[in-house]
Image (tube, rainbow, N blue to C red):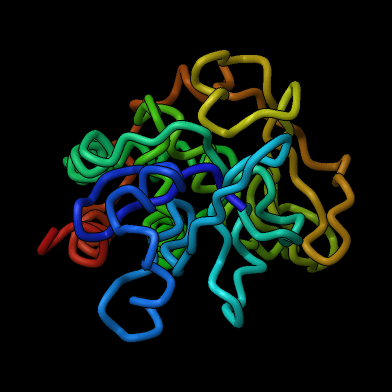
Length: 252
């Protein structure tokens, strides 16, 4: 559940009380009649409805009944993989601008470079999959998110495969799937990691069990070892850049 959702017609982040104020107390019946819309989950884009309560219970939005939202952090029983991918403050206009800024050539190459330096090897297809998942999860709209933190979030959104004789992180003697998990210093929304940089970690874990992999090093967010080489983008080929631009940015 979430304390806020997006009013689709107004493109405005609202509370349950505000949603009912806009749509009227007959909203539920109008939804059944097809004359009203559901609210939109800020994290996954699925339908949500308002539940206004009194007393000690907190009013909230809930996912529409029958909708599988297990991969959403606002689900009652979220997949542990994505529990960290949530925010308590959103800025939609700024997020839309940030996504366009991400597509500037230097920014796109820098993000690809940072992801590659952390994971050891990232293909263009893997990077495209990360960004598309970020689009689906609307991470750009997290309040005050800055471009330099985006790669650390992107790396948590897909699984990687470790194989023999690949560089750095993936140079192991057998193959397995792994993922990166953000470990926050305290239980808090993801948008706090850029408010308090250096206090949180990006850790590799086995994809099937979630257990930390101690053979692969952890990284601070943001990590000084990575940040001092952030702008070393000369190795990215022109065909690779054109592919990223075509798949992720053209037409936006």
